[in-house]
Length: 111
Picture (cartoon, rainbow, N blue to C red):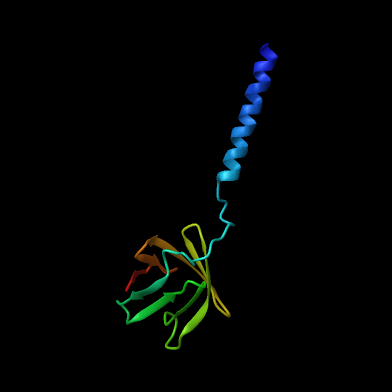
C-alpha cells in the first residue's frame, strides 16, 4: 500500500509539472496584431511630430528614424512588439492599450 501511494504521488507530481510546462509561454510563441490592441497610430512629440502606425495585417509605417518613412512588419511576443524593417530590427514594449515604449525608453501614446 505504501509503494502504491508513493507511485501515485510521483505520477501526480509529473502530471502537475507537465501541465505547468505546457501552459507557460516561453517567449517563442507569436500572435498577430490582427485583433490586436495595438492597431492604430501612436505619436511621440517631445522631439518633433514622430508617429508610428500599426496595421491589422502586421505591417507598420512611421517617421521615427528619419525624415523619410519607415515601413516593415511586426509580431507580438508577450508584451514585446518585434519590428522588422529591411536592414534593422527593433523591440518595443506594450505598456497598455494606449501606450507603447520604444527601445530607447520613450513613451508613445495612441492618437
